[in-house]
Image: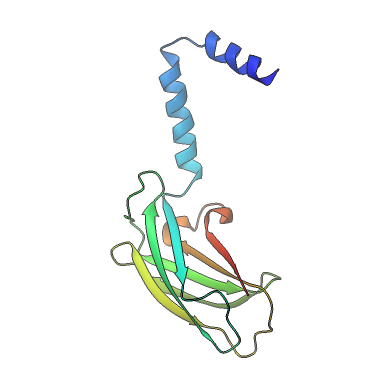
Length: 136
C-alpha cells in the first residue's frame, strides 16, 4: 500500500518540480543537522578512578566528508550512568583535530560512564548528533 502511494505521488508531480522537491528535502536536512561530525579515539577501553583518559579527535564536514571545520572549540564530557557530569573540558581545534585528556576523579564510583564530544557548531542542534561513547 505504501509503495503504491509513493509511486502515485511521484507520478503526479510535474517533472520540473522534482529537482525542486529534492532541493527542499536537502535544505531541510542541512538545516536540522550540524555540519560537523566528530570522530573520537581513546587510548583504551577500560578506565579506573584516578586514570587519565587520553583521546584524539577528528572533525569532518558531515555533508562533504572532508576533514574541515569552522569550529574553534571541542567540548568533551564524562558523565555517569545517571547523566551527571563527572568531568568536562574545552579543547582547541587546529587543522580539524583536537587532542586532549581528562582525569577520572578518584571520587568516581566504578560503573559505566559515557564520553561525549561536540564542537561549538554542534551546540545548537539535537544532542543525538554528538559523539556518545559508553566506557567502563
